[in-house]
Length: 79
Image 1 (cartoon, one colour):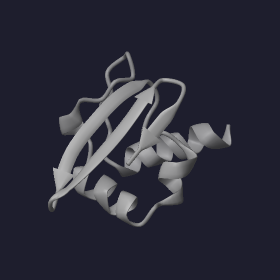
Image 2 (cartoon, one colour):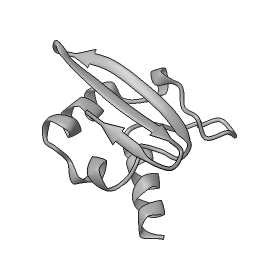
Image 3 (cartoon, one colour):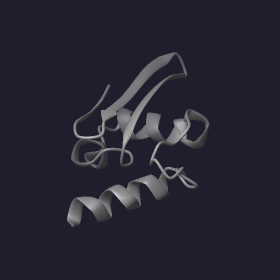
Image 4 (cartoon, helix red, strand yellow):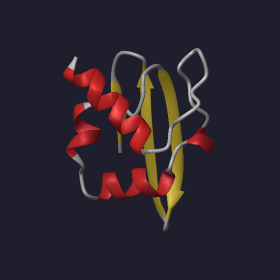
């Protein structure tokens, strides 16, 4: 339950709203600047829960730094 609440809070905080019924968000629906800032600060929110439920693969560059966030729906990684 705690992880579900954290995941929901994280998703809403990152602007991942209007997620389709299959729980997949488009890359244009994520807040790349905020995700980059969280990654730079090694945010515990990124370490403790996926960005949102379901499968996703986001790869983008902010200020010359490449970021990668992936989930297969069960396990998730970010770098």
